[in-house]
Length: 102
Image 1 (cartoon, helix red, strand yellow):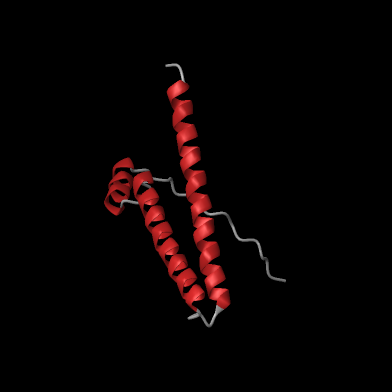
Image 2: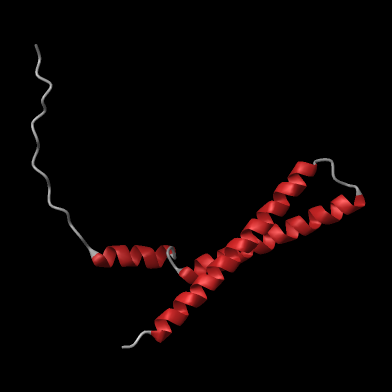
Protein backbone atom coordinates (compact mmCIF):
# COMPACT_ATOMS: atom_id res chain seq x y z
CA UNK A 1 0.00 0.00 0.00
CA UNK A 2 1.41 3.38 -1.02
CA UNK A 3 1.76 6.19 1.50
CA UNK A 4 -0.20 9.33 0.71
CA UNK A 5 1.61 11.52 3.21
CA UNK A 6 3.61 14.30 1.63
CA UNK A 7 6.42 15.74 3.78
CA UNK A 8 6.21 19.41 4.71
CA UNK A 9 8.64 21.59 2.82
CA UNK A 10 10.48 24.50 4.36
CA UNK A 11 8.75 27.86 4.00
CA UNK A 12 10.55 30.71 2.31
CA UNK A 13 10.57 34.02 4.16
CA UNK A 14 8.34 36.75 2.76
CA UNK A 15 9.95 39.84 1.33
CA UNK A 16 8.27 43.21 1.74
CA UNK A 17 9.10 46.27 -0.27
CA UNK A 18 7.14 49.46 0.39
CA UNK A 19 8.69 51.46 -2.42
CA UNK A 20 7.59 49.07 -5.16
CA UNK A 21 3.97 48.88 -4.02
CA UNK A 22 3.60 52.65 -3.58
CA UNK A 23 5.15 53.33 -6.96
CA UNK A 24 2.86 50.79 -8.63
CA UNK A 25 -0.23 52.23 -6.93
CA UNK A 26 0.75 55.77 -7.84
CA UNK A 27 1.49 54.81 -11.44
CA UNK A 28 -1.78 52.95 -11.94
CA UNK A 29 -3.90 55.56 -10.15
CA UNK A 30 -5.83 52.76 -8.47
CA UNK A 31 -7.11 53.33 -5.00
CA UNK A 32 -7.48 57.08 -5.38
CA UNK A 33 -10.80 58.07 -3.85
CA UNK A 34 -11.05 61.12 -6.06
CA UNK A 35 -10.59 59.07 -9.23
CA UNK A 36 -13.13 56.51 -8.06
CA UNK A 37 -15.67 59.22 -7.25
CA UNK A 38 -15.10 60.93 -10.61
CA UNK A 39 -15.63 57.65 -12.46
CA UNK A 40 -18.80 56.97 -10.49
CA UNK A 41 -20.18 60.41 -11.34
CA UNK A 42 -19.36 59.94 -15.03
CA UNK A 43 -21.07 56.55 -15.00
CA UNK A 44 -24.13 58.08 -13.32
CA UNK A 45 -24.30 60.84 -15.93
CA UNK A 46 -24.10 58.27 -18.73
CA UNK A 47 -26.83 56.12 -17.19
CA UNK A 48 -28.99 59.17 -16.55
CA UNK A 49 -28.69 60.32 -20.16
CA UNK A 50 -29.52 56.83 -21.42
CA UNK A 51 -32.56 56.67 -19.14
CA UNK A 52 -33.74 60.11 -20.28
CA UNK A 53 -33.36 59.14 -23.93
CA UNK A 54 -35.27 55.90 -23.31
CA UNK A 55 -38.07 57.84 -21.58
CA UNK A 56 -38.31 60.20 -24.53
CA UNK A 57 -38.43 57.30 -26.98
CA UNK A 58 -41.10 55.62 -24.84
CA UNK A 59 -43.24 58.76 -24.83
CA UNK A 60 -42.91 59.03 -28.62
CA UNK A 61 -43.78 55.36 -29.09
CA UNK A 62 -40.42 54.48 -30.64
CA UNK A 63 -39.63 51.66 -28.20
CA UNK A 64 -40.01 48.00 -29.05
CA UNK A 65 -38.44 46.57 -25.88
CA UNK A 66 -40.07 47.89 -22.72
CA UNK A 67 -37.87 45.71 -20.51
CA UNK A 68 -34.66 47.46 -21.60
CA UNK A 69 -36.23 50.84 -20.82
CA UNK A 70 -37.15 49.68 -17.34
CA UNK A 71 -33.72 48.12 -16.78
CA UNK A 72 -31.92 51.33 -17.83
CA UNK A 73 -34.18 53.38 -15.56
CA UNK A 74 -33.52 51.08 -12.60
CA UNK A 75 -29.76 51.24 -13.26
CA UNK A 76 -29.85 55.03 -13.20
CA UNK A 77 -31.97 55.06 -10.03
CA UNK A 78 -29.65 52.58 -8.33
CA UNK A 79 -26.58 54.60 -9.29
CA UNK A 80 -28.21 57.76 -7.94
CA UNK A 81 -28.97 56.09 -4.61
CA UNK A 82 -25.40 54.77 -4.42
CA UNK A 83 -23.98 58.22 -5.15
CA UNK A 84 -26.16 59.84 -2.48
CA UNK A 85 -25.14 57.22 0.09
CA UNK A 86 -21.43 57.60 -0.72
CA UNK A 87 -21.68 61.37 -0.49
CA UNK A 88 -23.50 61.35 2.84
CA UNK A 89 -21.10 58.80 4.31
CA UNK A 90 -18.08 60.77 3.14
CA UNK A 91 -19.50 63.96 4.67
CA UNK A 92 -20.28 62.17 7.95
CA UNK A 93 -16.77 60.69 8.07
CA UNK A 94 -15.30 64.15 7.46
CA UNK A 95 -17.43 65.62 10.25
CA UNK A 96 -16.31 62.89 12.66
CA UNK A 97 -12.67 63.47 11.80
CA UNK A 98 -13.05 67.21 12.32
CA UNK A 99 -14.65 66.64 15.74
CA UNK A 100 -11.76 64.49 16.99
CA UNK A 101 -9.59 66.11 19.59
CA UNK A 102 -5.90 66.00 18.88
